[in-house]
Image (tube, rainbow, N blue to C red; front, side, top):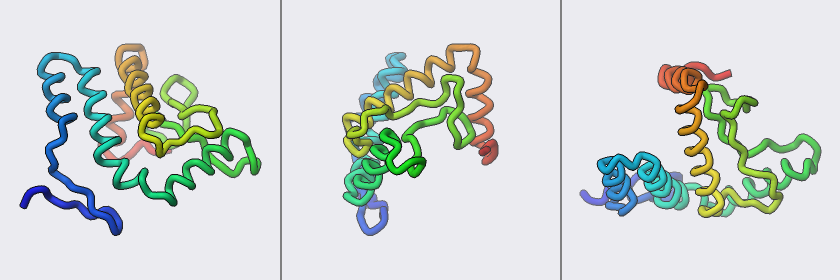
Length: 153
C-alpha cells in the first residue's frame, strides 16, 4: 500500500513518498556532483524526515533552545552540553578538526531547519575535507568501528 506509514511516537511519518530531493540527489551522483548530491540528501533527511518526526515537537524545541542558551551563557554553570557533531566513533568531542559545533549564538535554534541545514552542510563539508586530508585513515577507522558496533569511548 502506498505510501507506507512509519509510526513515530504517536505521530505518523509518510514513508516511501516520492520527494524531489531524492531524484535530484541521484541525478547529481550520476553527473559526478557528489557534494551537490550530499546537499540534496541532507535536505531530504532534515526537511522531510527529521523536521516532522522530531523538530516540530514543541517540547523538543524548548529543550534544545534551553540547553543551547544554557551552554552558551553557562547559566546555570555546567548544566548543559554543547550541540555538536563529532566525526568519530566516540561520543565526546575531539580537538583535531573532527568536532563541528552548532555555534555560540544563545538564541540559535537547532529546530529551525534553515539554521540546522547550515550546521549539517558545514559538517558535510568538514567530513569531505577530512577525507581528502591526512586524517582520512582516522575517519575510515571510525566508520569501521561504528559499523562493528564498537569504538564508543
